[in-house]
Image (cartoon, rainbow, N blue to C red; front, side, top):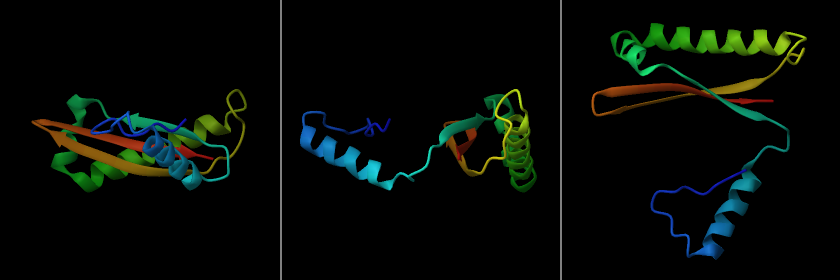
Length: 105
């Protein structure tokens, strides 16, 4: 389900809300998919600041290997999957947050 952004959104503008949702629906691929997020625990995220290339390479490889292994297991899906993974990172105050956002088809 697609939900409009909450920040700064005016719910009284129901026509604008409906148009926003319709526009997002038209952007979706015509295939079934699921969305998965792998998040690094905050006490480890500072490692990304020390050596970004090594940290993010390990994070993407571990994520990909986990997805492929679990999907191939006949007790789970027993299939080969395709996926798109995107890095999301931010720093709020002194906390760094790192996540891999994944769409699996």
